[in-house]
Image 1: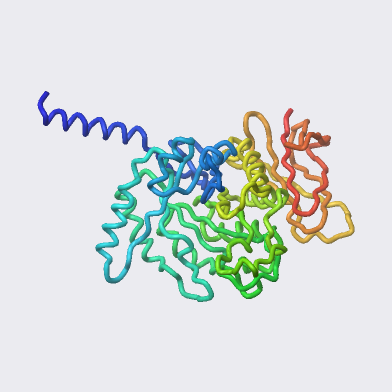
Image 2: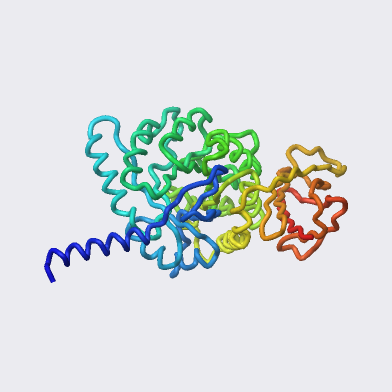
Length: 405
């Protein structure tokens, strides 16, 4: 055969294989991620825990996405996981041309990999520890965006922000990304030594609410940043703050300050973020956990529950207006019960959580002509009376109801 034909045939075959293998990610007008045209709820991790089978363990738990460098994409793909990877941004001053070349090369290196779902630019660019100026200005991303899209039109861009900074400051970065994320890690024992990412009061977040229900308030804040149509991911806590202080001598380590999220806390933070409108949940910090770890087991348990409900969560919100009538429990209701309704496979799913630090009892009405109600994963049913159910929520508790006819 003509050598030229051999080369041409090989090139065409390589192109066909690459084109067939590439995932195409986009998003719907409610921010839901689509993968090859199918709506998908994202459950991801910045890393696996310490394990002999790190990616397989993630996939078995129900994760569908993991952060991975170019040298790890094959391993993640073999486990059936989608990936995202960092490609950087551009410089605005000296070295701009070289940075554009480097950015394009980084994108070209990974864009045809079958596991790739998203490209990340720079983490927390608007935030600088204990300073007011941005670490990387928004213009760097606005200029990088068309360059990345020209090289790779098939994948969304992802950018994570710290929980601080003004809404208008963060909005300036929207021109440089498709997906906006926010990390918030509120499980904190207090009284920690000064450390990176914590304010002088010892907290990472800066809202008046210091309870774990601040997660939902940060979703509200970030929805002001993104608007209703752009994808929003929330990055949740999979670590203990005490474990992050690498500079602390072992003889000064205070074991009583090692505080991980409990199962109940992790479940609440994940489902509150979902109820408030997150299109995806990611976890950061699992790589810092000693193994075996009850906390990692608990997080995987939460992830499994989300994964089992992922087809439901991928649906558009149902057109259901839920009325909430509280019963007297001897406490004020500061925030109270929050709800999200989804319809799937002929059933109505009502996701609820109590964002209040006190117990709540309430009747939820407006549920239409559904006649049967089961509490998901709780092995109990509730009577439905005139399109209403009544239940009790402990502080920061989640109930998910499956209604049928």
